[in-house]
Image (tube, rainbow, N blue to C red; front, side, top):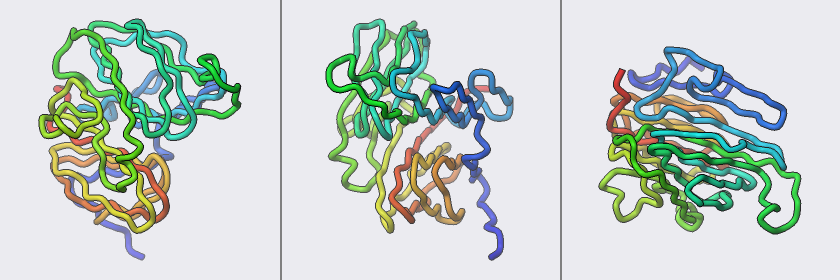
Length: 255
């Protein structure tokens, strides 16, 4: 079979090409430069700075640490993650729960895989989640937190808005982010189900799990990502049970 010639503006990044950090308790794979991993050619796409694929062992996690001027969206695939922050918000994030933290002019928070400390039985299950950072369109805002259950909406198999600052999602977006040029969607697809990607100057498609076929580009597996520039509208078809995350972005970070 001949190799597929990708359309201009379609850049596939395979799972195995990602930066990796393994601390024993944490297995983290980074789509963009992060921490000790830096590549000046791979710092962001559109407004998306971080797309970390993290697995954290039970009883461990990220101790209290600071953030500033960043919109941080966490999407749990398996297990549960306990969030606590300096604004007094705390709770357990689990699959189907949309969660956003606005760091604003400064916030401290922790993320731990220890939900039994809030009640319930001790478990040994790791938590697997994707954490994504986008820049806000205004700095020094009041820090904030929001979460909302959207498990029912995901049953449709379509692209479900998870977090958005765009006016077109004023009614339907699960949670709001402070950037009017960005929106995140999720879809859970069964084999044969398809969704159509939005049209936007910048798109980022991430296969969180499973396998899909991207129209005009071929097969994508767990951990694969596609960066689209000035192109969109392709169909994504599941070839096995899959979960995908899609960022629609109408601006980019200034050089």
